[in-house]
Image 1 (cartoon, rainbow, N blue to C red):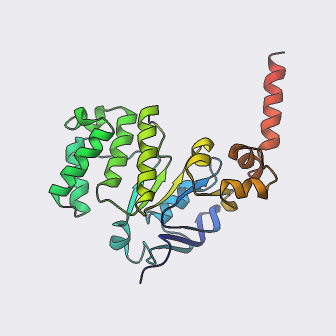
Image 2: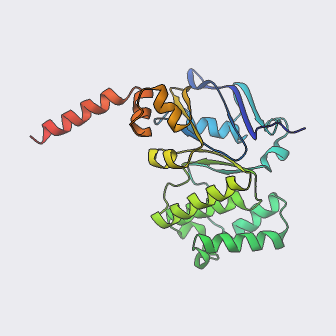
Image 3: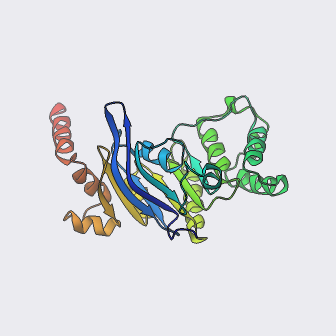
Length: 261
């Protein structure tokens, strides 16, 4: 019997030698919600997402995808996930057509279904003209779109996205945001990280803020404002306070002003 929540993370920890990258965090992602994992650079966001996706094995703790471990039942679990990493990692000697055919084959998607879905996604992201062009010659933004499309070919119920809007132009970012909204409206679940507070504030059902490997705050944007007595402030202000960066930001602004007096 499947668990109630698509993603459950329990006391997750990851050490790299003497460095503790993720330090006992727990959260869940529910059906029909976008959960944003926010944090400064080096906070442990990417490491967490890679563990949830089953790419990196934790030192301790559990990840459950519909009640199954991605490390004990990797094939079943990974078929339920579409993962877009922060660093684009494609077979650049291939064309998008060849790459998508390869992804469809390992995802065991029928070619007829894959062709239809790929054609629609290519049209949505306006990259049909590059279908038979070697990936190595394409722009970073086009490669990002190829990475996103490859994660959607098998129509997974869970999307795990690490900075998915990076490298996208304004129009493509808008299309991507519409895609995410459509995905959760159909009962899917999304876990994603972003540095763009305005996007998290507008799109996320709930957010978790990670700092120095620990989950230091969690809730809706409204709940976080109440929790940290920032009722009239933006998520950015809450984030800076929770991650202990607000004072240093004020000092930096003061130094900038003094530099040009």
